[in-house]
Length: 312
Ligand code: BDR
Ligand code: CA
Image (tube, rainbow, N blue to C red):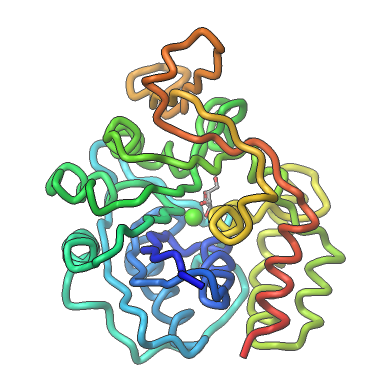
């Protein structure tokens, strides 16, 4: 079976961590590298978490390259309220010996894309700073990108504000560059990710697998679960970032519709909104994204559970 070559761009982050675990375990994905960006926590912490995860799960062979520490234009925000001081809630991992790659994230992506015989899919699950700078600095590289499957935005909802989702709100100007780049985008936004819920009992099942992966994900989920219970009053947590991997591994469990998505970078009440045009009479030649709207929740949870259960 041909594996899909991917580069994951993360702000690790509880759900980024689970998404990485799913990707590491999948026999359908060929991870050419992981790049880090500031978002849920500072760049030092998101990079540390990523190195620790990769080494803990025995995948030292995967390069981890450190990326941008600040958004392009706006002041930096982080999400310690959702991911804790470390970025991984109460989950603890041994400090990895592994060091970040000699190249920074953008140079690493450029080199990896240039040297690859196949086109590579980029999978960003944090603010889009690295991706925007890659596309701006090296426009020729677009030809080597198969598509961008990202977690961000929402056609019908926001979380950081009533109209803006965190990854887009943390760096809207970069998101604008990416969404207007002409590269095909699959947008796994809040419309679908708020349906990608792992319930309290399912978290217990994940822990009960007794594997390293199950125990790590289960522990990380605890902090996230408490945050969701207080904030959203749901009995579970939305595993936003892992929806990107579900899309790549089992696209048939996701419902999506093409649309034209524009990033609002100057609205007073709609700053960072992903303005999504589904109108049948829009100019469909301008569609730039496939917008995911629904997911078979149980099949999604099974992807996470199986990744944990089968962890070698
Ligand atoms: C997104 O924001 C981050 O806090 C999560 O890791 C996810 O990427 C959800 O809005
Ligand atoms: Ca994230």
